[in-house]
Length: 132
Image (cartoon, rainbow, N blue to C red):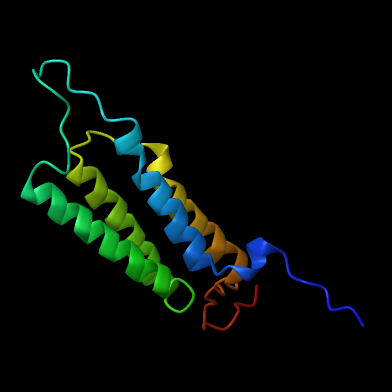
């Protein structure tokens, strides 16, 4: 009897996918550095130049790791941690706007939640139906 193997993308937990995508998206400012503002002189800001940038990068990495662990058990806490991590990552690099690539990991987490969680039941009124 041949046991069918699961596809690779189904064997890997969703937290690993989310963390891997976030780490790849985190390389974007290193590969394509943000440009300096139009009225600003000198090179573009770098998160690795000062202490606050390093602290925000550390905070965002810690939040992403905790979100990857929590994604299957506490999905809303994981989604909140991913959103805060993405915002703190943008603050660390002193970006004025967030690129869509930085929200790719959040999109993967939302897709996982939408695909695996049952729909929330609607609340019904406890009042007896009126007889017209």
